[in-house]
Length: 52
Figure 1: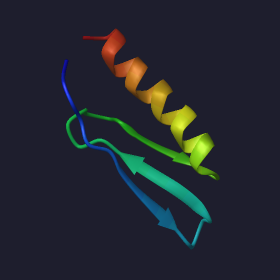
Figure 2: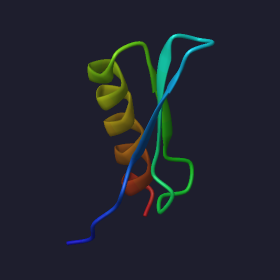
Figure 3: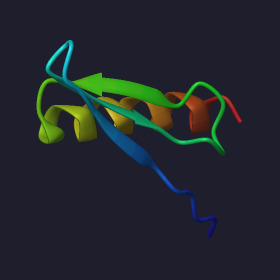
Figure 4: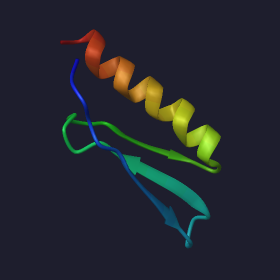
């Protein structure tokens, strides 16, 4: 099993959370809440892994 680190930042200008996973190309997501960010991130990660 591989381990990846996700970085989460809060963008005060857009009032949203931004998450990236540097080890996965294209794995970045945005959400108005942390729960929404988590759900969107899972979609992004799954999309990537389905194409590997």
